[in-house]
Length: 150
Image (tube, rainbow, N blue to C red; front, side):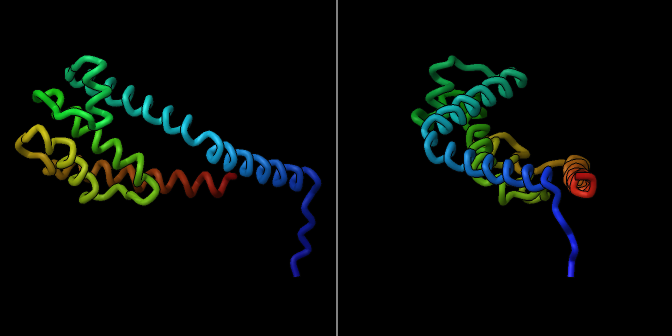
């Protein structure tokens, strides 16, 4: 049999982890509406910032309406914003189940440009796909190293 005797320090740390887990579960339960509002603000800010980097602009009120899917996009910039909104929503809702694969990347790329009717949507250069797949492999390696160290 295993003669492992946990120290008081280890027991205290495990107890703290268990208590914090319970607190975060309750936090999510009791503050769901507030957390959803914060997530929506983050989505709007992310969409605005990312699109501005690309030179894509619209008014704040239009941006909010496009993000909340209350209006149809009027022009090319707004169609790009709508595509970004859809990809961001997909990631927020499914990140736990998504893996970085060629098909996932192509699907998101296609979704990104589906309103803008941009030629080449859903078609990426092989070098970009290889880079992203290498990133996923590197992330797994880092995770394994982290698990071994901690």
